[in-house]
Length: 208
View 1 (cartoon, rainbow, N blue to C red):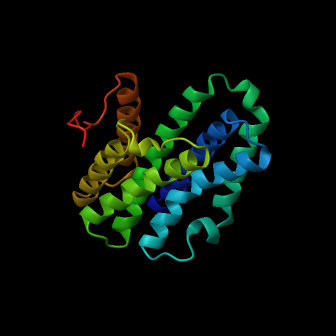
View 2: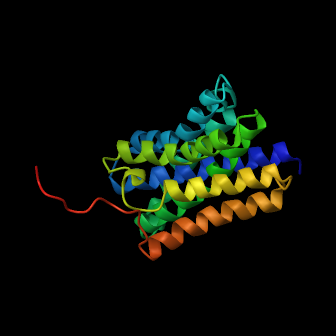
View 3: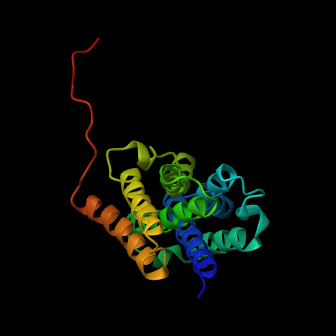
């Protein structure tokens, strides 16, 4: 499998899992079929559209390649159809979201590096690609975006993008190391949820 083929596969897999995450959240909010598919598509494609616009790849792949939109829509519709069989939707959403976060961190960072964005900028693009879909999903379903809460979310994506940039710098940006980087982000996100790790918040100061 060539690097470009592996990147496409990872990108479409990320689209599918974020679509499932968005659709599951929409089902939990009792939205209709259109609402579920719409939230799923926004969750799946939002981060990638941002990435492509920033690296000046126009039109974005979400619009130029039919496989992206179809993958997102079909996945979201499938979640709507089979949601009675999906037990404990909240857990499902969190696991799928962690998987999407991991995959989009890797593909977003790699695509930025491929067009010669400096490493620091590529890490920022990778992080924003990863959190963009979840941000759109939460806003549409009336939730405080995960990235604005105390949870380890954007930090996990940023850490993963740094790993990807280091692998690329030292010539190890092949399938196995990049898969390991994605697993690292996925595991960090899930472990932080289970152990309730959080970023620091301001202390209670004197009220003005």
